[in-house]
Length: 526
Image (tube, rainbow, N blue to C red; front, side, top):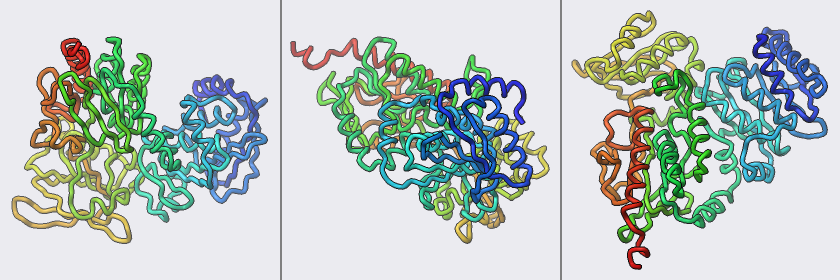
C-alpha cells in the first residue's frame, strides 16, 4: 500500500521507537479493511522487535485499530485509514506510543497528565482537510499521555452513515462524551485549556507578572511574526500575544506567491514563522485574545494591553497585527446552520458534500477558486455574486465558465439560507435587476465574501477607517504615539501574506526608531 520511498521514510522514523506496543485491528471483508490490514502489516514488519499486530479486535467500527502500549491503559483508536493529510498524525501516534517524546512544552504535558475525569473524545476528519491534523494530533497525544482520555479518530468517508446520522457537515468535528465539544482547528493548548477550568486564572496571573516589553506585538500572523523577528534582531525584549501563532495562514491550503518559496501550505508556513521567531527567543504567548488597549499615561510611558482572561501585558511600544476573519453574509439561516451546511473552507468541508448540490457566495478570487475546487467533488455548484459581474481574475473566470456543472448568478443578493431538520436545504436570492426572488435547493453554502478586520476591541481608542481598519502612515504609526500596526487589520490597500510580512518588518523598525528617540519617563526626569 505504501510505495518504497514512503516505506523507507517510515522505517527511519520507527527507529525512534523505544517501548513495545501492539496494534489491535477490527477488520471486515471490505476493500478498506483489506487496505488497513496491508498498512498495519507493513508498519509491524518495519519494527517487528517493538511492534506486534493482532487482528482479533471486537470494536463496533470496522475497520479500525488501536495503538496499545504494553502495560499501559492508554486508548487511541483510528477508524478508517489515516492517510492523506492524516498520515503524519499516524506516524506521530506510532512514535509517541513507542516512547518517543513529543515536541510539546513540558508544562503542557504536565497539564495533560493532571487532567482528572472521564474524557471520551471522537474526532471526525476527512483526508483532504488541512485543518484536521492539528486536532487529531492533539487528541491522540492526550490519549497517549493520560489514561483518563480516550480518543477515537474517525475518517468520515469510511463511515458516511455515521456522519449523516450525527449531521456532521464540517470537519474537524469533535465530540466529548457524546456531546459536541468543538469544531475547526484547535491545538493541544486550546483543548486542554477548555478542559482545565482553572487554567485561565493561572495563566492570567502568570502573564500579569511578566516584565514590560520593549516591543509587545498583539497577533501572530505573518505581520506579527515578521515584526517579532525584526524587533528581536535589534536585541530588545520582544513578546507576542496571539490567539494562535500563524493566524489565518493556518487555514490556507496552498501558498504559491510568497517570494522565494515556490510552494507550501498554510500550516507548514505558520510553523516556519513560529520556529523563526522562537529562534530569536521571542516570548510567544498563545491562546491570548486582546480585550482593551490603554495608552501610555505620559510620553515614553508604558502601554497596557488587557487580555480576555483577565491578564495584562505592558510594553514601551505596541504593534497591533490582529489580522482579519471571514466576513459573514449576515442573512437569516447563516448562524443557525453554521457547520450544518454553512461552511467557509472548501478544502476541508468540500468532500462532505460529495455528489450533492452546493452554492458559493462571492465572485472574487477566493469564491471562484472555491467553486472550481468544489466542482470536481460535488454534483453542482451555484455561484452567487452581488455585483453585475464576477470580480475574480480573468483566467479563473474562464476556467469557471468551462465547467459543465457550474451555474453563475450575478447581480444577485443572497437573502436567506434555508434549512430543515437542523441542516441547510436551500439558498434564497433576489435578482437585483428585476426584484424577482429565487430559491435554489442545495445541501451546502460556502461563504467567500472577503475579510473583516479584528479591531472591534480598539473602537474609541485609536483612529479606525469606516471599514474598521486601523489607520496607519507609511511607517506603520497609528494615531497613538508608540502604537504601530501592520497587516490585514490596517488600511494597507492589498491583503497579501508577503505584504503583511513586509508591513510587520516596517512596524518593528519604526518601533525601534521610536524607542531610541523617546526616553523613558524616569530617564527623562533624571
